[in-house]
Length: 82
Image (cartoon, rainbow, N blue to C red; front, side):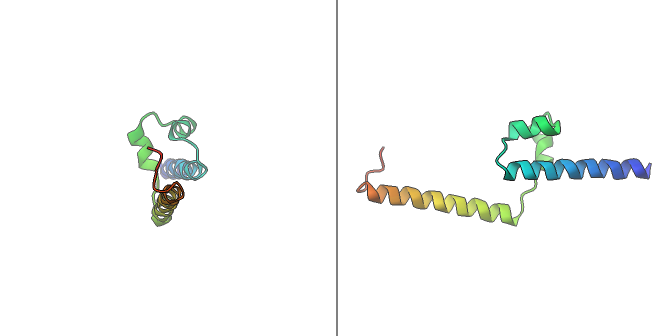
């Protein structure tokens, strides 16, 4: 019994690590779900890990994108192309 619980925990740990690695590599959620065998978003979501580094990276990417947009608007003389 204890061995089956440990095996179950390892399987969950493997899935969690696999999902995290695939997301960091840019693999889409649909593909990751096929690979890990998850059928629903809610179950897949239980395995997703979001930590401080992920939040910081999201903020930095958003900030860089907004800066590029602002610089593009300035370079176009205030015309944002709309």
